[in-house]
Image (tube, rainbow, N blue to C red):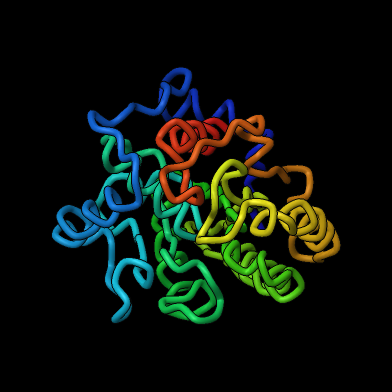
Length: 274
């Protein structure tokens, strides 16, 4: 079976596929600075172009961002999976006219109390279809699993269930295989730990000390679960977290939870360069 090692091949892929060093992720002409901005984008841009797929009666918080076949990034060789902050990454790339990765994420981001969910056959099939296309086009697929799928549950210290479900989802994605032209391919999966919320303002009506109090524990236990997983343990060398990627300089929009454009640009560039 042909497993592509992103860490070893990253520089080669950038130079051979993109003919030179990776250019910085472009910046959109207009910055989105509030959650209302994102709701407006979803209604006026996301729905008409088909990228943001409605998935429930509760509006944007029940919707799913999918990079669709034939659109920018779908056959890029890179896939981003996660919650509403990964939806933001897809939106950022679309606003900046980038095409460096595909995104499959849900606004709700939970495994419970939200539809569509990350752990459904329909979701896996969407990711798998993209994986197949990327193998056909690039002979490789690097999948970045941002394990920010249950951040709202931190206030309830729901880490055990959240980690179990996150690891199960990542294992299923890492187990995908595709035989193409006599070679069997699997994605190279990198699990990325969570950033919680703002520390200088309430988050979802909770004081920051209450909302953020389980974040470090979540990342520590998630890393251990990844290391202990027979499916994911080889990805431990690629383990990182959003705070590490952003050197703890995380910026948020007005809700104190979702990232600002500066942070989104840095995360997008990380995916492009690693």
